[in-house]
Image (cartoon, rainbow over all chains, first blue to last red; front, top):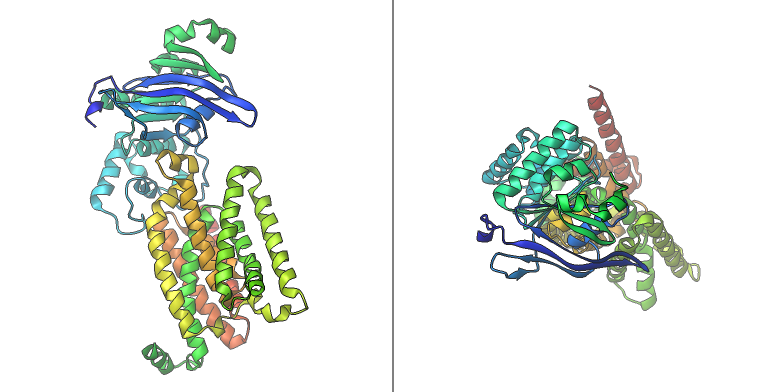
Length: 243
Length: 280
């Protein structure tokens, strides 16, 4: 992907996205940009439609409008590769699946219980090592702590290299030191690899510190701009009661 | 096949002298790992209840076969099994909150419908063999069919395994990786439907789900990764199949039920192992 080499020109375009459930309009004409090498935070009160928006981008919910990856030549690619780090992975913790199985299953078609390629295992070990978790490789996925699981999910989301990385409240269940480490890691990552990052977060102080752009959502986009612009807007004060 | 029979005859056990026991033994070697393998994902996907409903629906499949007058009931059973599985998946997808209730409704409806049709005129007794099955009645032609089925299922299984693993972990996560999770799940349930329907004559409506679920559930107690899960499941299913079959010969009990009971014992043993290892 030559366009990812520090161009800063490619972007993910959320174009006029609407979602209806029965008669309820959950999202109305949502449009914004997520530029590569930038972190765009999506904030809003409970029930503002943040999760619905993410799931629409993932293609999990029927919606109108488009999600387009516009590369540096201005060409539109409709099939975007998304990396998704959910806030809370709802899974059966007793399931017999190891970290290695989980990461392998996303990278190869060979069933994970067959003999594995050494190179692939080394690759996974190296990726885990980058987030400081190489020792987790043979642990059972269900036995990981919240923070460990988050890192493993991040490693999974980064391969194949995503056009858009979606972080869904990525640090819930992690202690404060862990939170800061995690954000620093993400920060370094998307700067180095020029990935467009969209993040949903409740933690406004973290958003203030790490986000480049902010989308204030309540069914539709109330305000979109830089952190300062959004945090000083009237809409922000109205939504969050002048925090 | 003849060489195999001759080989068994030379063995110093009384049960190997009977052709039907040798056939049943080979059938166990084919059916138990087949059901067990599919069972690993049935359990991972929390579909134990679904496969139970599927097994029960065989009765309706048979009834439909009788009504339209086809000789080979397998065709109507497999067709109805696939149809029912896909319908349940569809309904489940639109209303996930009460999946178990929906499955239960389909299950009871198909059992009742099957029983009503088959018992019209008071002739149900000739179908009662389908309730508990009879593995001792299996012929060498049936064995060949099972063998082909095993190969086909394992091939498809190998192709979809990794995707299915991600889907069973979390559907949203799988979708974010470009996996068409509905398609993968549907392929899987069709696979289960075909295997269940083709084995039901030998295992029976009442017991089929146990052979699918118990070995995988037992293995889950002690497995830490996918490979262990699969290996333990196949070992447990083979072991309980062989022990159950031979035991049933000597105590003159129903083979299917004895096999299931043996797997159940295996489940409690592995559960105990897990509890003990958790404590230490």
